[in-house]
Length: 168
Image 1: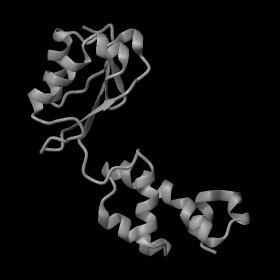
Image 2 (image 1 turned 90 degrees about the vertical axis):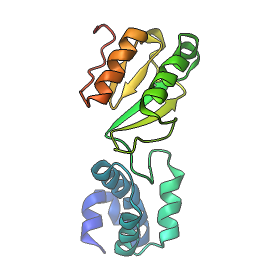
Image 3 (image 1 turned 180 degrees about the vertical axis):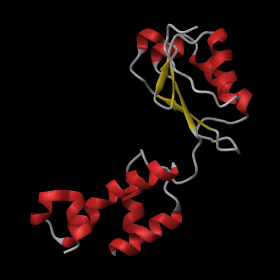
Image 4 (image 1 turned 30 degrees about the horizontal axis):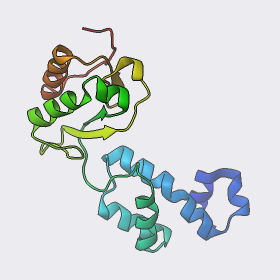
């Protein structure tokens, strides 16, 4: 038995085999690595494979199964533009195009200086505030061209964006 793994998974560990415990710890380990490094570096996955004595192919298989894990460096700020129906109808394409143009990146790409990653999402769930984007954990709604200019300016200056829809 491995006391470190037992500590992480608690009393449920009593009924699991060592192999099951090791595999059960993978997702927790991935989350911790990604929290610290913003992605899953190859060298960390190799180290994890060796430490847990799990084939590297199984480590990758588990990590690639979940959309939440990334394998290349991501930006300090993650900008997600909603492309759902309400946001699309209210101008999400203009929001996306402006950000792409200003930062010379496409959806799914990260700026060279790792300051920002741009993504799209099917629906953020704030349809009444359309068009909507998130910047890290902040929701920014009712984005018109004036607000979009402020957002782009703040992103370029690496300023915090609070996101309240009623802030002007």
